[in-house]
Length: 306
Image (cartoon, rainbow, N blue to C red):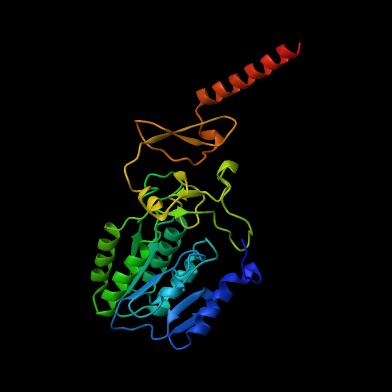
């Protein structure tokens, strides 16, 4: 992937500084906490709304700080949750008499950071509440997540909460409209290729097998940065890409070929994901069958050479 970038270690602060320089009258940048906040915050006539997640998902969230949207955003490094201290300091700096609402994308690191920050802020007398966003329908029962992820649907929640907060609604009312919007918002992602983090310099997904590394392949239900996915398909038209993840299809089961990666076969029973589980997840019987098959194959080759 070709890109214009300086030192990858300075990617996030340089990006935030650039946003502040481009909006000097409306945005304030606090580099100690990766904080982008409205220049008129805190406004004690409205609820302050804060969100932050890993950088690399722009325009979320630092580029939607402004009237009718967020009052502040505090991103972490690329694809990493912000430290709890960043969230805590952000909540304190924008705390208003009406309170602070923390919007959290439903990832393990984000939940941990924001919940700790809420406790610390409340201990300092800041009225604070948290709303978790979980619009992604692809990984509701995933073993890798804390439930459905919060991805593109968070923009609808930000806008609804921001608009109502501007009208002077209470903290409870703003949280209620956010929960309502989140409850009726569902998303499914499709990616053409794996993303390339600045520090890594190569695609972050290693689960894509060589036969899928082509210009004609796309991945269904991929998260913003997550390497796991549920299905891969051949890219064709925008209409087919739009309808494929949501239209009724034949269910599939996951089968294992011992010499290749996981693959999906049609089935009439259920649907499962194609992510490769660790070897330790295989049952003892499965491992025994694999070892027996390998031993039998070696014995056959040895007898043939005799």
